[in-house]
Length: 196
Image (cartoon, rainbow, N blue to C red; front, side, top):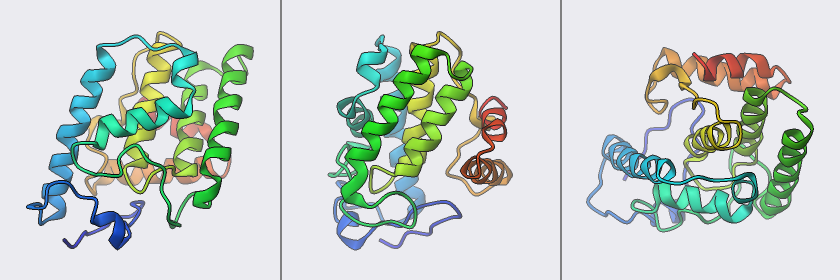
């Protein structure tokens, strides 16, 4: 299967492509559709539960959410990547960097270091920067931010521009620009986008 990657998407290694569970998928559009159906099931799963900080801020939960989002599509769903990517930390540092992020996020929550939206978006941004998984990191980090803002702070989930963020459109371009601004320390642009 040939995959047509858009700006900001992380290419899969050939070995990772072999983890596709539905072998009849032949186009990127079919793959996106199948993944979206799986993600909708994962969102429904999150809505049926109440999560607390001690549950959310664990490696086990991070992996579980990814598995719920992509487990019907990819054999490696919920497993940390074992390859280098065009973004993210070296694969062997994932668990360490994730632990730092989880501890930092716990500190931010306990000490009201930032407003709730900013805590959730900082968490999202750093999670996608670590790039724990072979694929789906952006979608995973957005759902994790939604879980955090709703479960911990009792706020409405983010709108993320009200569109499918995998489609190459103007909203996705704004999202990529907001991520790049956050890379340079400007969290406000990404927070504003998340609430747009």
